[in-house]
Length: 258
Image (spheres, rainbow, N blue to C red):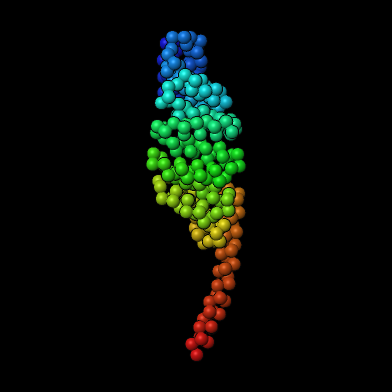
C-alpha cells in the first residue's frame, strides 16, 4: 500500500474533508496485496464512509459489502447496518431491509436499536406501516438507545398512518419528555398538534402549533398549517357561541332552582 497516500487520506478524513480522503484512499486501492483480511475490511469501511459523506450511497454500499466480505464476525453487525443505510438512501428498500435484519442475527450486537430504526425506515418506504411501527417500538425500548425520542416520534407517525391518533399523542408526548434539539422538538410538536386535531382536541392542537410558530425555528408543513388554521376557525366559532351557551345554562339552572 502507498503509505504516504494513506496517511494523507486519513488526515483528510479526520478533518472531515471526505472528498480529498476518498481521492487518497482510491490511490491506495492499487496496492492492497500486503493487507490482512481484517485490515482490508477496515480500509473498505473507510471508503464506504467517504462515499456516504459525499452523497454517493450506491458506491458506499459496494464498499460496505467488500468490507463485509473480509470482516471478522464481531464487526459484521455494524457493517450490515452501514450497508442497510447506504441501500436505504439508494432506494433499494428490500435489500436494505435484508441487511438490517441480518445485523439482528448476531445476539452479541451491542446496539440493536440502530438495526431496528433502519428496519422501521425501510418498512415505511415499502408501505408496511404496522411492521415499521413494531420496529420503531423496539428501537425506543432498547436500553442501549441513548436518545429514544427519534424512534418515539417515528412510532407516532406510524400510529397516525394507522388511524390511531390517541396512541400517536402518547408517543409524541413521551418523545418531548426527552432533551431534543430545537428543530427535532419543533417537528415533534407539529406532529403532536396534528394528532390532537385528529382527536378533536382543538385547544391543545392550537397550543402545540403556536409553540412551534413562536419559536421561529421550524416552518409548519402545508398539512400542519392547514390543521392549525382549521383549529383557529373552530375555536373562533366556539368562542362566538359561548356567551349564548352560558346564558342558556344559567337560565336552565335558575329554572331548576325554582
